[in-house]
Length: 137
Length: 137
DNA sequence: ATTTAATACTACCTTGGAGTAGTAATTAAA
DNA sequence: TTTAATTACTACTCCAAGGTAGTATTAAAT
Image 1 (tube, rainbow over the protein chains, first blue to last red):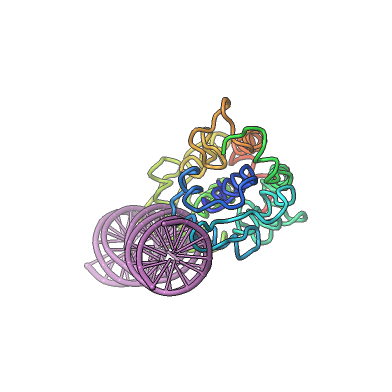
Image 2 (cartoon, rainbow over the protein chains, first blue to last red):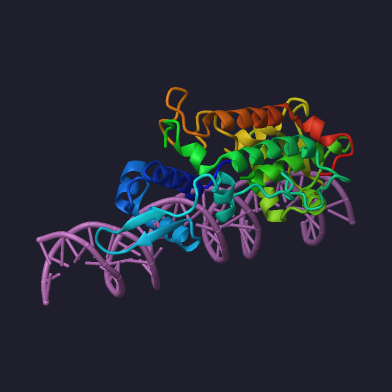
């Protein structure tokens, strides 16, 4: 029960970029070293983030990445969605296909309560809120 | 963000066995068919459950499995522990090694709140409570 | 022009979870 | 004593996540 590394990395990458918004471009090398993420794996993620439009890339010497969207408009939930890592709403925690409000599995109601709280947390955690306040990244 | 199939299957297997406690033995075939779990994968899990002492097996014709422990004394949490599927208490949700109360990651406090609720739910959900009440299994 | 530092692309390797196949061992029934 | 029905064991396959390697492309600095 945990997030994928790709999601965890992405959250930290975007938060780092927002924390250094003053600088026009940030390189993969800097991100890799400061966030302790394997360089090659990181660049793979970055290319994906470029493709979905979260960031922009400038190639060539002195190149790097730039955060494109508003930090207050991207949430942890969005990132989890992107990497298919979110908690699916229909999905029964015990994997029972036909589990629904009429014929519930034993954990149904309790799980919904936890699930709603988790989803709320993910949805309300913007990159902006994660970046600021001297939080560890 | 979900449980492993092995954990899901095990919860349902044990609940089914408790629901049929009147019968002395239950076969892998019956479990596989009624719970819609791949036969070979199920027997692999059963052997594991025998090894950790949750159930007992009788080999040979007319053989099968028997629930050994008290249904009120095995929890979903125990099962998640068994398959290394539980939420680890020390583990930062963003995967930051040095995340602790003194130097927190941005999700730290919110995550703890959700985590505690989840752990409580898993710890309080005994096989007995899952089995009864006409719940879907 | 050449070099250098950067991103992008293609192809691979590794690991663990999930699942399958075949056979051995066991034991009651026939 | 043979057969049938069961669990146990060994050894695989398949797939996706995580990660690595090498090369191509780009563009500023020299």
